[in-house]
Length: 331
Image 1 (cartoon, rainbow, N blue to C red):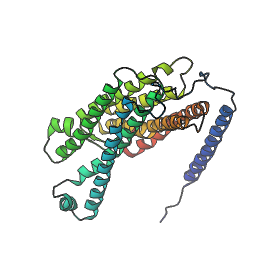
Image 2: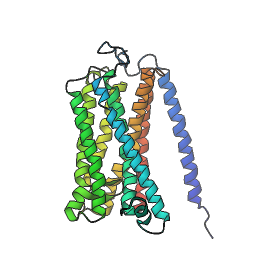
Image 3: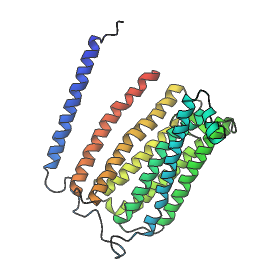
Image 4: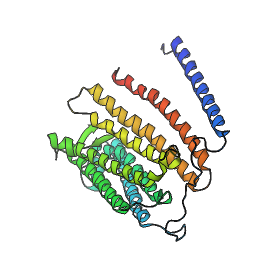
């Protein structure tokens, strides 16, 4: 049928594989050089990541601020079940022969396929973000003394997160079913972008809640952010969470009156640079933090790996986002 690879296909495929192997060797070389460095590679103080128990009640003591994080994990489980249910209903409806028929038979109410698909797409991001929020806040007291008012801020953060989740779910349904129209649908219903379905108001409220989360982390790790510990694991925990939330603001550049290519550019900046890149940075930070807490690796090794990983993510992210431009002819 004439579907044969061209000469250029062979050349670029070979060059891609060559660059992949060259990049892998470079990473292994840098890692080996960093591994052989004596002591702290970034001149950090030789502090243990885990402080002595602040209340002198033993390591098994669970502080009030830690108990306040339990509800984040419960909320994450509920959201996970919502995502699974939405996926099941969407799949049943997709193969059931008619929009909403399978959902109507299962629940007795009409939920359009577009609604359950939006639920399945957006909730999958939100539930594991809630788990990350709970995880980071739970281990903060093991880094430094708990600041005054920290428990109140954690409870306030949870209220905001629940409001965003409930408001987004109801708003998407109301917007898709015509209960909300025009500006009300845009602000409180759905913005109409994949992975950013929630209304503009809920989007702003979500950004506000995540900024509060970063502020809570900053209050806890502030004693670590010194000239001698700028690249320590607790500092990276703050950097990773802060960068993750910062990249969320790309979604605010999208407006209904924009050219599609420009608006979708900012959407991809939000999705690719936030979901795919900053999640990787934050995951590396919290995994390294957890391994140090468990005593499986020392702090120096965790800091070296995190520093190397962040450099890799930066280079690959700038190149990787470009593959999205092809599909809608963006420059």
